[in-house]
Length: 224
Image (cartoon, rainbow, N blue to C red; front, side, top):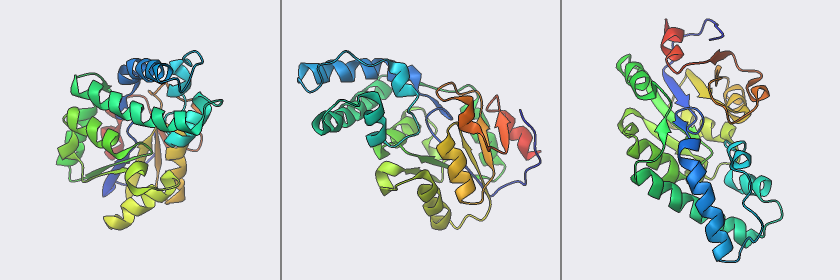
């Protein structure tokens, strides 16, 4: 953990993918199913792109993800990919697929016990973000689950600004694994805590973070 003195916050705001949820434990099979179905429906006839390409785009808005993953696709194919991705993710979660990172649930419970409000701010779809929290048994720990899909925000900076305003939060930490999380923190005057244990992005994604953690439990140490 890269150590820096932080003031105990009223709230901690978490990204979902690559921060709380180890997304590849769900997405590898989902990715394969999405492209099999697109080919069956003759919407995308090229070979399936590497799943690492999709994983490297986590944290972006969905429309931007598909432009990166399948740049030669049609708008109809990208729209259908959106629908299939959500359908297959929810089916996988319901079947017990996908894992939280180690120590996530226990650490969230400790933070909650210490009187800290917990939130999620994700660029994902509303049903997916709420589905992960529900199926993984952590939904009740959060005071709010915010997603770009629900609030139609153009950036995570805007999403976090709305969250802070809605709940009248004066002090908070932003915890995430992507540059969009660092930007959301800095754009709202918050400390940025970078999750160095995540493997989906490049290390440069976390440039500008105030603290880097290599284990989710490091958050407890930052309080002390």
